[in-house]
Amino acid sequence: MAELRRTMLYDLHLSRGAKMVPFAGWEMPVQYPMGVLNEHLHTRAHAGLFDVSHMGQVILRGPGVAEALETLVPTDVLGLAEGRQRYGLFTNAVGGILDDLMIANKGDHLLLVVNAACVEQDVGHLRQLEAQGISVEPVTDRGLLALQGPEAEAVLTRLVPGVAAMRFMDVAEFDWQGATLWVSRSGYTGEDGFEISVPADHAVAFAEALLAEPEVAPIGLGARDSLRLEAGMPLYGHDMDATTTPGKAGLGWSIPKLRRAGGARSGGFPGDEEILTELADGPSRLRRGLRPEGRAPIREGVEIFDAPEGGELLGRVSSGGFGPSTGGPIAMAILPAVLADGTTLWAELRGKRIPVAITPLPFHQPSYRR
Amino acid sequence: MLKYTEDHEWLKQDGDEIIVGITAHASDQLGDVVFIELPEVGREVAEGEEIVVIESVKAASDIVAPVAGVITAVNEGLPDNPGAVNADPAGTWFFRIKPASVDLSGFMDEAAYQALIG
Image 1 (cartoon, one colour):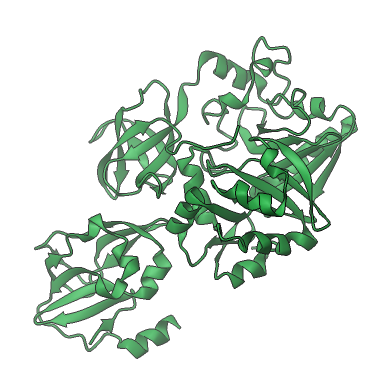
Image 2 (image 1 turned 180 degrees about the vertical axis):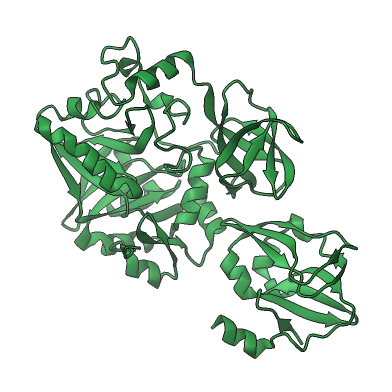
């Protein structure tokens, strides 16, 4: 096994008492002494600081870069205004999802943020655009921080006046003590907040400056997972993968009419036939929310049946756990689309079947500043 | 005086019964406990049998019977307040077990347990 990589905030995590775990080839904080439950609740009530420097940042540059990227993602990249960001998917030839990503238009280039576990694959995938004169530049000299929660704006404004004017999914650059920050108003928690790319030589000082603010606590991967689960956000490699179509992953919303059948720039991305046919017909299966009865969490892999005994195996939990803000267990699974919200199914847990109700996503309503 | 198992349980003798809980170290390792399933009172259990399901925000694990015996009582309020385990592990019992005869001499004392967890 290859040696785990460390972010530039590694020593800071240790100094804050973090418990470090391997994650996607990196040694990352899973929790701090506050604990996952309280870190989660702190983020929903105040502001949480996450080190997401393990994620990949990639710059794409060159004439016609938006058109070029549209050959790999079923997203409207051409229509993405300067200073704006959009969610997208890399798809494969059979209509599966290679990764999910953020795409920002920064004027003379596009900035992509991709999953840590997929960086190498994604960069290799993007290199096919080089034949069209596009340069693919992995950003290796910057950290990435996320500041999330209802008090994130007030906190960040003290350090970086100007961010308050940003709307949800805006991107902009700001100066902080001589360093250029790349800021987006977005996140992975269902809260208002920001993701901030900071030059390596300023990363620790910037993180410490944020942590010095009374509203801010450092938050680990444990709470990041429960926050995104409550927000109904899928996690790559769990709720979707190379065999899951955008339709089944419940991500059809990220594919605009313009890229769909009959649209002005219909198709032209890997797996377009499979993906667009499925979206036109309506996917037979769909990522759904589940609320188990009682307090027992149902976790990834738990089988879901349509009867309290015997019956048909309908699917498996793709993400599940305890929702600190919802106050009970929650889960997601890809299940037949025909089943109505509120339908009772059964999860098999330790040899017993537990009733679970299909529940609309998200479990926790987001509070973005649009 | 408390005794300890290698499974990070604390044991306290009370007459011909043993009261069982988990150590602060176990509670720290588990993280925030969100679900507990206790055994039925009257159940006869074997030594090492998994009899309590305990789930934290991170993962599911089990608590095993430290000795063979009969479950004589469980902490019935605990499933509704699983966080008590983290707040006060030493003061939060899970179950009482009655073995054929109580003999805790084979278990670790405080010093030996501290040495085990380093």
